[in-house]
Image (tube, rainbow, N blue to C red; front, side, top):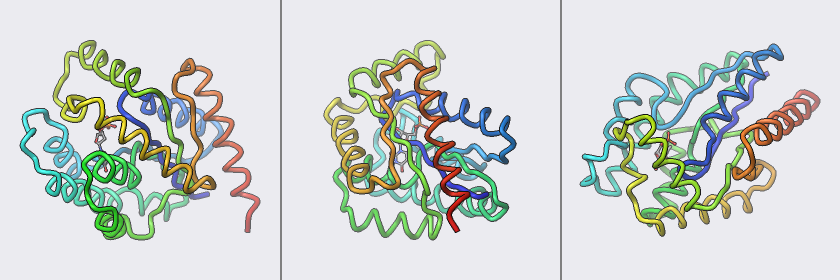
Length: 217
Ligand code: TMP
């Protein structure tokens, strides 16, 4: 049964670890799963990711950034998301169109209509069925993200982590507003809990979502 599930949150919200755990659980239960991410998810979009996230590219202007996210998404949707859904698979995607509204809209202050139009152009009819928002205080998330950079000795994707605290606060507020506007699609997860507690909550709510979906005509 096809389902498109997306995962959103500020930097350091722990969603990537949780997606991996969910994937393992779903596969063990016999589901066919495709795990992917944005920006990226296929070779061309991964190259665009390199441009978008590299700290050397601090000169990238907001409109160019927006267009690159849209370009990466158009490629990823066509190559990965759409075919997987057509084959009846569950697609778990680390960030999608909501990230553009939160980051380029609330964070960078770009026009909402423009972003919605570009999201539509890039994603077409591929809209998430369920979105899990991993929420936690910005200071905690940024602390975790910076620690990860130090631990992994890799700063090649740190351009956004270097933004000011207020930028990330606007993104968190933007995400919470999106969740409030679409309560049917969004579930908010308290990302400050232990990884095991979060994994249990995620697994339970996705199982419920899938069984309701299987029952609906
Ligand atoms: P992540 O893979 O570590 O979550 O990094 C992706 C970064 O790209 C993260 O800082 C959020 C940002 N982003 C946007 O600004 N707009 C978007 O549309 C997407 C998908 C991600």
